[in-house]
Amino acid sequence: MRAMRRPGAYSCGLDAALDVIGGKWKVVIIWALAERPRRFGELRRLVEGVTEKVLAAHLRELEEDGIVHREDFGEIPPRVEYSLTPVGRSLNAVLEPLADWGDEHVRGVLPH
Image (cartoon, rainbow, N blue to C red; front, top):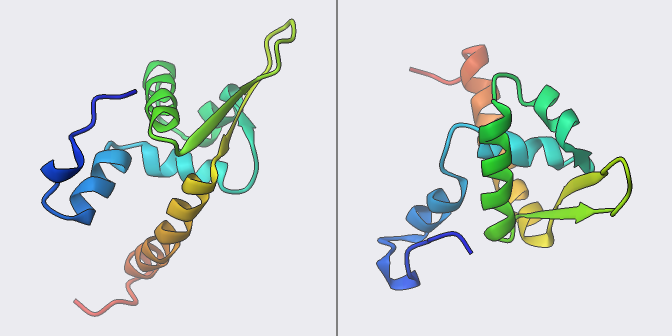
């Protein structure tokens, strides 16, 4: 498991949440997996700008945190799919209002 801080080390729930989703690409990866399971190459195309190395590392961390499930079908050529776990789906539901806020902000709807 990834080296996370022990539960008492977080100053608040937001601190704990950011420990899981921190990083430039993790939220975008979660968002891409919300619709359906995806293979690595498909995620690589959907998450524009992420390198293969960073995508692989973030997927591994999200899997270790219980957000993403990795299914290896044991086939040749290799076929692996990533999907959200129930915990990942609940996290995605929490991210939806944040995405709505971002959409409004980008369109200039929110007052300055």
